[in-house]
Picture (spheres, rainbow, N blue to C red):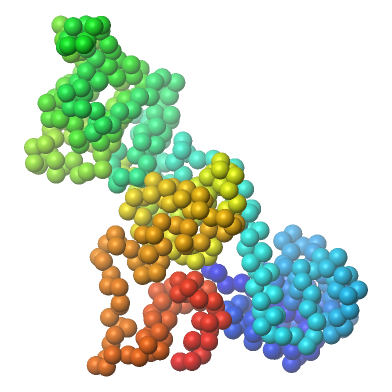
Length: 461
């Protein structure tokens, strides 16, 4: 989505109108100029301005009448009124009629530009607030959130696999939400009203895993005073989720295979088997085929699981979901902790899009929780984010970005002579502009300067 804004100027003084348009275009805005209110209204639907700058004294319909018509639009622009007759009464009348600000001629161009920027900032804030509310109200797919193509494909496949009843293997990097995928499969399946149990294979001591899975008979080992059912029996009729299955000891894998294939388990110390009806969903963040090749994971168990495989995409492949997820976490944490944060500053958004998020959604969630905790204002700034993320914005890449781009691109140091500091700055500005496809607003945010400074540097070339 582009950051360019549209500003319409309504001014019958051709010289002043040209001056205002030049100033607005220097700030990176799209502009359109008209000498009368009637012409402006006729062009309004096609141009759809974010801000309307209008003289109060116009030939034919005056500025107040234009303001009234503009305010009746479905999505009215912000309105800045200007006049050579700057009496208090006229300013109050314009503001009461719905103008957002009022300036008197002769105009100070810096003050004019600042007034327009404030109106645009307020407009962005209003959009953020609306989005903030819609994010809170928006539903998710069984806790999984996202509207990007990779996530839509994942949701469709979850629905398809849920209708089957075989074991499922969920793969993906740490923090992508594999546990939520398992819960979604259960919720979409015919077993949804039965038990869903989860266990982390790496979190249970190896000598207790067999008893944890299959239960034990009374007297099976020291301390086993009475029989205890295992997870397979407790999940009978429902779904059992085994996270980090790649860490399961080889000795237990054969018994798990029998439970999956035959639906039969034997508790530790028992002399007979029990029939169970359990759907198994396993998850891993390692390459199981490599474990198979090394002999650490049974080949027959792997192929029994991978018939229905789901790969959860990493956050770096879900670019359009980043803002949605960040706003959702912001909304939740701010509401839960009664914090003032309501939006992300543009530079904070740019920083988050620069970072590669190796920890995926979990890392994003933790980063936003930290930012909400430390933010004392409405807008989260880069400094509220963890240092490693803020540093990614300063360098233009993160340590975890694949390929490891150099900190100083080669084209900045081209030539036999080392460039002067001014030359290096100009080259770096051009380099950043190329990286953001000429978007001056985003370039200024990444450079950490105001757009007026960026335009001044460009004019110095």
